[in-house]
Amino acid sequence: MARLLVVKATAGADAPERCNQAFNVATTAATAGIDVSLWLTGESTWFALPGRAAEFELPHAAPLPDLIEVLLEAGRITACTQCAARRDIGPADVLPGIRIAGAAVFVEEIMSDGAQALVY
Image: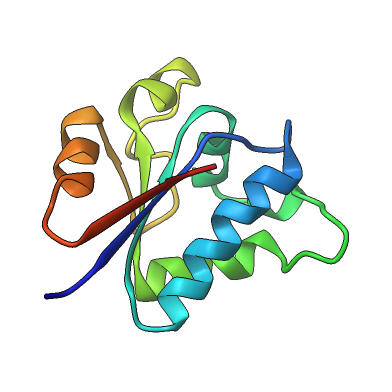
């Protein structure tokens, strides 16, 4: 049975260490060959926009644009529908490969056979 790791990032630049942990764990799993789905919610939703990840700074952390690139190649990234709407972010605004989806899709992913969900 294939395993799915669903990581929900709830923090952005407002809590940089927690944000980085979500991206780091998701990227580590993806590079290990695990099916990964990273969800951007709350303040992390801003990282769905071009250029925003480059503004993120955390000492001794991998550059966020590099982590996003890996996840877009080896996994998938989703921005929360409501979180995006609250920030006036639409499908045409996000980086290529990032989708916008809501709670029903999140629940479907975390309830699938073999799924493991982590929230940061």
